[in-house]
Length: 304
Image (cartoon, rainbow, N blue to C red; front, side, top):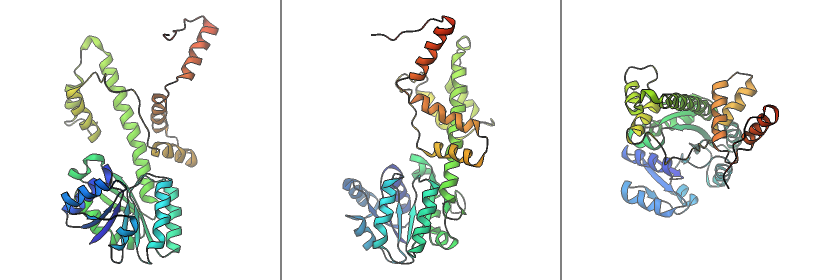
């Protein structure tokens, strides 16, 4: 089987490596030509000079897999691909797109006779070694065509991937997955901060997180990664207290509002990320001012 991969960053590049090591031919394109050249040398990727060149190197039914930032970059690329493709060809969006966008794109592409698959992709930088978890939305026919690719990317042919529903279902499932991830990460962070704060016990967080990895009900891959990191640095003085959010946590909370479902843990975890991103701290300044105004509480002033 031969397919094209557009976008060879950390995720796309490693996915190409895993595909090649499973014997699948890949035509690769990225705006960074040096990345394409490196993958051509190291993995035997068929280098393309442009998206059009990548499509020209395929034969039908042609499969073009996109690993691009969500929003305009993905939208523009999908639109640009249509004139290059024919009926029966397939576009796969493996990025973190909003599922509403995926539903709209799937409907529009179906009108052009082009198949579409939205693939929620989890596994991060470890996917090359351990495989990716793939949550797939699309028609049964499109899912069947992509089966060899999904099996190659997953941890094993019979697990780690699933056709979860129609177009949009893959990215919806990944969105909720990421919302849960926010809550789990926040719970670990708060619990470990409480352990660290009990100074009289002088607790070793590396020891405790390693302990929890074995037969504890909170064992998980997130705990594995945390335990490994704490072995080298428990103070984290060199790490800025800023936590970015990819957007999927926001979409999850909006979905909870739309459905009228109470999701306080996921919502608060997202709000805590927002709080970490506020370098001005204006709301906290207001709170301090109000406490001083009604109770005469001291205000801590900034230096300078």
